[in-house]
Image (tube, rainbow, N blue to C red; front, side):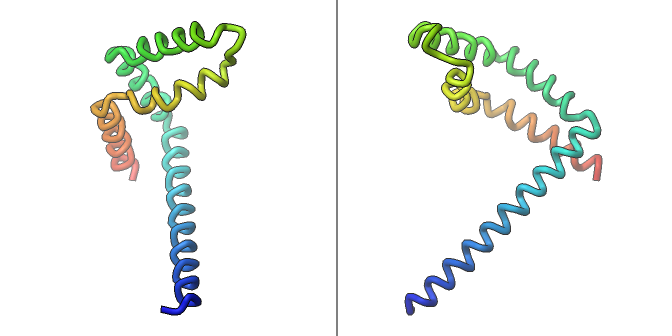
Length: 114
C-alpha cells in the first residue's frame, strides 16, 4: 500500500474518531441537562453520598488526606494539591457495586424520561 493511501486512511479514521468523540460529548451534555432540569442529579448525588459513607469510602478518603497533610506538612500542601493527589485514588476505590447501582439508576431515569 502506498504511503499516500495510508495517510489518507489514517486521516479518515482520525476524523471519524473525532466526530464520534464529539457525539459522545453531546450525548453526555444532553443527559446531564435532563438530570439537572428534573432534579434527579441532586437526588442521585445524595444517594451516592449515603452509599459512600455506608461503605466507609468517605472515612478512607479522609484518613488518606490526613496522612498526606502529615507527610507533606500543613504549610507545604494546598487544597488543589490534595485534590490532585486523592482524585485518582478516590475514583478507583469506589466499589464496583456502587458504580453499577448508580449507572442502573441513571439508565432507569433515562428510560422513564424518554
